[in-house]
Image (cartoon, protein in one colour):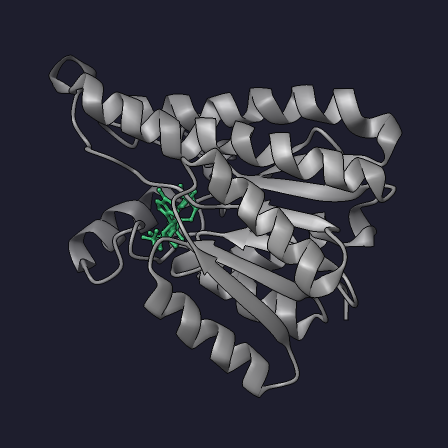
Length: 252
Ligand code: NAP
């Protein structure tokens, strides 16, 4: 029980990595507060966790809204009396196309969901953690924007995910002395709706980019998040932690 008694917010919990994290964190003893826009999916997940021995609540909303970031923190405090961790994981790929063809609208949407929302989350999570003696915050970045691995047409996505690493490093150094650890998790290709699930050609293309010649299961990425949110990573902060099947060390 790596997360016993910890209260953790998970965004992007209606699907993929976030949904796997919700199940795993609850199984590891955490109280989980789940966020995403689709309430039906969140409701099913919460029922499943609470039917077992877990403790979960949800609130649906858009991570681009500051009031939603605040609401998730308020729910954690009201339901469980604490905020020990946050897995700020919601994200979108956006349109995949060469940058000269990309609309400003797409650029702004991807940056808002993937990067500005991270700023909003940190802005409201850190003061509460500071007041209660510390915590651990994890942002889901990506191999795209770090090693990139040959993924075409992802200028906005890559910029947003690389930007997250800069934000993480700044937050980590600003708040380390307050007991707040902040790390980025960089998954490689992962079998989720955003990762091409259901499309064999896309899965084969992405799998082939990895030295392991496969993509991650969402649960494998969730396991890495458990480590960053648990006390086992107590001396880690400001780290871009890679879980990418060797993508970043592959030969060209
Ligand atoms: P996914 O299954 O599509 O999940 C994305 C999640 O983000 C969903 O729960 C979605 O929920 C939520 N979300 C999207 N926009 C939102 C918004 N505006 N407000 C609130 N929630 C929003 O994809 P995934 O692969 O698990 O992605 C999780 C994270 O991993 C993302 O940050 C992604 O960039 C990153 N990542 C994925 C891969 C990969 O290969 N799959 C690789 C590296 C990094 P709703 O639609 O219900 O709002």
